[in-house]
Length: 110
Image 1 (cartoon, helix red, strand yellow):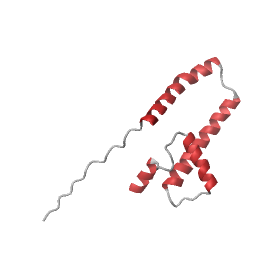
Image 2 (cartoon, one colour):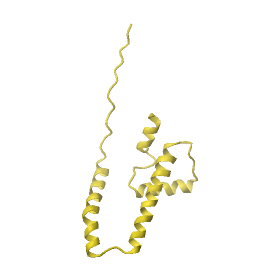
Image 3 (cartoon, helix red, strand yellow):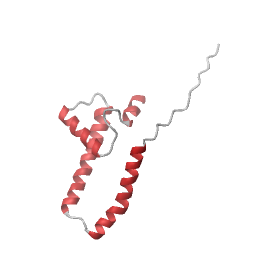
Image 4 (cartoon, one colour):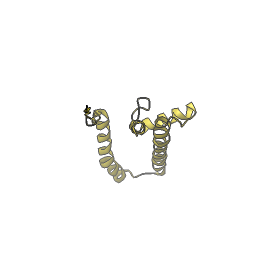
């Protein structure tokens, strides 16, 4: 007797319209607003330093926090560091670390 197994195609994740709106809005602000600001006001060292610090903090929080800390259960960190990474991930406009990150699903599936 032959058993017939049917596999359904993987479901597409649902669209999160709030995220789409936020990223679309910030993209247009960056593309239009940044050159206008630079033309009319310019940038000083404080703004450039803030950009570098924020970019580095967000990148580290995504890599060390969202990818390693919450996706790989063997990676451990002090609760204060976990909090700092959660703040940095939120600052980088990632989804909540507590409801799961797409890399978590990928890591569990593979």
